[in-house]
Image (cartoon, rainbow, N blue to C red; front, side, top):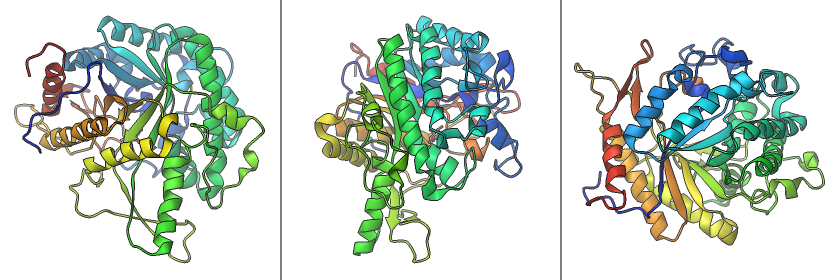
Length: 449
Ligand code: FCB
């Protein structure tokens, strides 16, 4: 870790933390909440590595005031959370479930009282199960349903949410949820999952219009990006790199920024109706960037169903998820976005960045996580360098405030600045929390640095 002082961030830089509803809330049936695809998936044998589910998770639904106090103690000015669609519309259609929205009303007011901007993601992968039963995101109608849900949510919260995020990582949802089936809803369609991309993007565009009609707050989407490192220098390796680049980094960005879809092998464009691309390209105010690691790519074996092979990258330290720790990839990615999209690129906020380690409390109950401190230090310096390179980055949200239920990994991967005991649900700030608190305090105007 660098011993040089952390360079100053621009005035007004948005320091934040991120979570998502299904990973922290629990209270799976409270106030009329309906089942989501993740409830169904977690209750199917063999899907979750520790056979757990998100039914209780961090019990944030009941402990949200304690969690907002932790954020206030950290000194963040923004909190990115997600709203559970099955709380707002238990069946995915019809009028709002007022009791479900009441929870977010309380949360938003608690945040505002603590001086923290509520940043609400509408969809972080928890589709109401009845919509999946009707085809999920393979069904064009889900896009319209999503816009209705956006309308109902913004009608209630549009005066207080400070930034809207429509979708979280539609690429990961499509590829893991519908492409290879390791996430809910567990379908294995490979490239036949393309309609899921188009319908999510269409839902995004329709939701942008719905949000604009009910709220004057800015609107964003949070995409996952991974700089592509091509291993090998044959034409086939380069073609594989370009195919993966198109799939991971461009499929959900080119059409948003008015360029239509990139060339992709195997993708059937027949789901695109007249006018869809204009709906999808509705202007957004911020691009949310979720970054974890670069991806190594080389040419596929001859009998592979995919046009690329993904390979591990050597030479980097690794997290407990075995992901390479590569802050240089974040600077590279931000430069790539600016160079690729130029003036069409809106201001960026890093809406997720973080790491999993096997953090264990010591005999005194303290949790030291020096690797996470080094991770955050490196990635924040990368963001600062990108700002120096001329990329307009306005904020950084750490994934995550709390250790939480990490999807198919259950409770086995800890990403939090705050440790959660999954027996008592007790919260213990880790040493990274104290480190970040001091860094944020030092970056305030008027603080002595
Ligand atoms: C991202 C997800 C988030 C969390 C982190 C580790 O892809 O958006 O919910 O799982 O990875």
